[in-house]
Length: 120
Image (cartoon, rainbow, N blue to C red; front, side, top):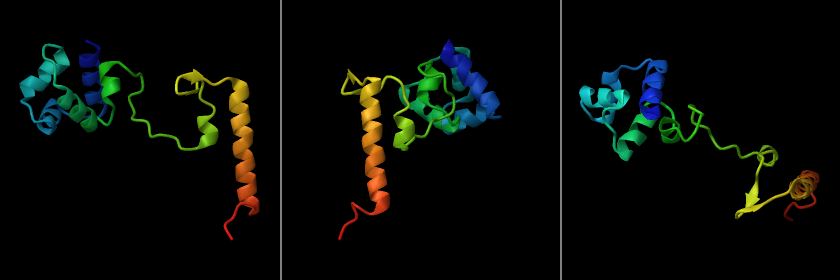
């Protein structure tokens, strides 16, 4: 029932009607209403389409994530190294490992900024 609850809450938050979402997904309004009531289950393809329309993720709708807003990947290595539970192919990285990586990256950036690694 989490799917139905989140679906309804998010549709209302996005100020969309059932008809608008149903039309976007390509189903009858009564079918879509069944999704929100928990009486019907959409296909995986429909869940993805609904998520796009509601500007969210299928994971959020299905209860696999608590973040309704789609998150863009952060490519800043400094920020990325702040994540807890980093691992390399399943082997956990200890805080000392991460600090070593951070120092190595800072050195690379410093050298690049000073022109030591610039191509001739």
